[in-house]
Image 1 (cartoon, one colour):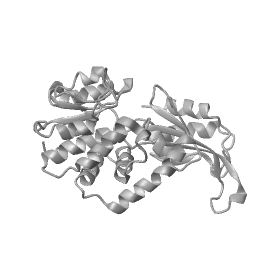
Image 2: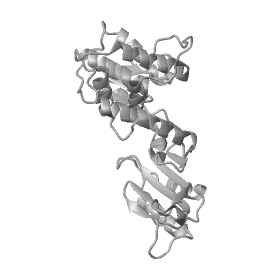
Image 3: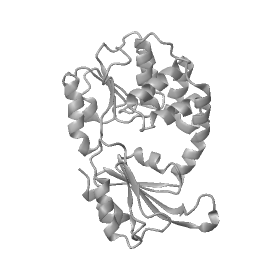
Image 4: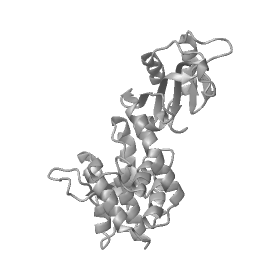
Length: 304
């Protein structure tokens, strides 16, 4: 199994809207014959993985059942054959690490078995294990960084498992974890339009990252956006940001903003909703007159 094989690492979409894409993944893998599941927790999709499914969330599994990462290391004597596609339903610390372990073993690269144990222990037992190693925290951040391709995330974790990671970057990612956790606790994320849009109500800079964990089209609402970050005395205002993960996501944000300009009482001749193809927002410095439900309704109309 070559580490840089195209389409080696992929992800099922568990939402109803993802059925067509899932079938394409299965078809490309010989009808599922060359698919190996990694924490495919949806039974109907797990059944399509012809090479099996490394998981520890099934009936009869306990907190002592080895994590996918630990199972990957234990499989070193029987590696998946060349041409295998590794698929998950959720790219997280355990699933991405399991893919990286298998890729390193196939490439005869080292695997830090103590780090694998630490990843598995934290995945199975959670916070009860105490603060995890910095490497585990950093891997978790990268594994869920949806601005990177899955191939890029797996390659990054491969390097860390091989003892070749950037120590300064690992420390920085681990230190930022507390900020991200604070943002998660102080933010509200909800799904709309059959799960295709995530609404994020948050005052934190990680709002879009939180949203992309749930959907590829976001409506972010900051009820307390600073008018001027350099001068807090100028106060705050109600700010909406619309964005999509990339240009392949079928939504016309430009058309949505044209319609929102017609509806928003805050819009003036020189201060309107606007932006570029993948991101835009409401008026600058002047609070939008629209409610979140109104903005969501307009964006949903322009989904492809």
